[in-house]
Length: 334
Image 1: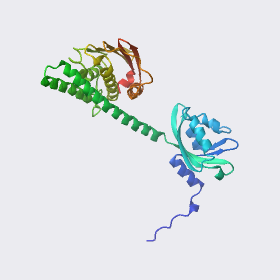
Image 2: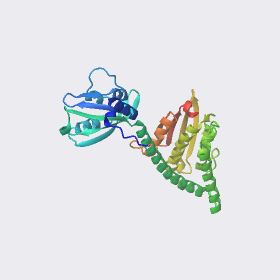
Image 3: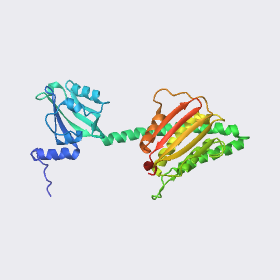
C-alpha cells in the first residue's frame, strides 16, 4: 500500500488559516505607526469588547487597558519600533465588568516594518493567569499556615505550662488541646456524598477556639454566643482560616497572650446575613498598626471578601481589639 504524499502548501488557503486561528483563539492586529491607526480582526474586537465602528487608534485601545498596566503597555508598544526580534507582553484589559489577561506577541524593529505598520497577535490568557495566581496564593497560604502552626504549638505549650502541676499533667493538657485542633480540622473537612452542612456556626467557633482556653471553650476566658445557623463545607473552610488567623494573632500579640486576657465572640443575624463581633479585653496595650499589614492581613481580607462574600473591619483601642466580621448568609450556606 503506497503512502499518501504530503499535501502541498497550495492546499493551505486563507480559509484554512482563518479556521486555524479561530480554533487557537488568536486575534490578529496591525498598528499603523505614522497615523496611530490600530487594526484588528473580528475576534480582536470581541476579545477587547470594542464595537467595530469607525477608526480605532492605539490611544483608544490604551483606555481599555487596566490602569495599573497602562503605562507599561504604552512603553512596551513604543519599544517594538526599535527592539529587534520577537517580543511578548502580558497585561490586563477591562472588558465590561470583566478583567481579562491578554498576551500581545509580535516582532519589532523599524528596519523590518512594511508600510510603517507593526503587526502581531493577541491571545486571551486569563485562565493561565488565574491558575498562576491560585498557585501563588496556595503556596503563600501553606507557608503562612506552617508558621502559624509553629506559633500555635509554642503558644499552647506556654499556656499549658502555666496551669500544669507536673510534667504528666502538662503532657495531658497539651495533648488534649492539640487533639481539639485535630477535631477542628475534621469538622471543616468537606463531607462525602453531599451530606449537607459541615457544622453549626457555634460548634465551629467552639471547637476552633477550645485549644486557646485554659478551661475549655465556654467555662474559661473565652465566651462564644452566635446564632444557630448552618455553615456549608466551603464556607466552613474559609471561616476556619479566619478564626485560626485571629486567634493566632491574639495568642501572639493580644488578649490571649496574657493570663488575664478575655475574648468575647458574639453574633447576630442582620437579615439573612451574619455579623460577628470579636472583642478582646485585658491584653497588652494595643497600638494601631502601620501600613497595610502583612500576608496574614491580606489573607483575612481576601477570605472575607471572596469566600464569605462579606467584610472585616478593625477598631483599635488601648484596652483591646474589636473586630467585626460580616458574612453573606447565602455564601455561609455553601
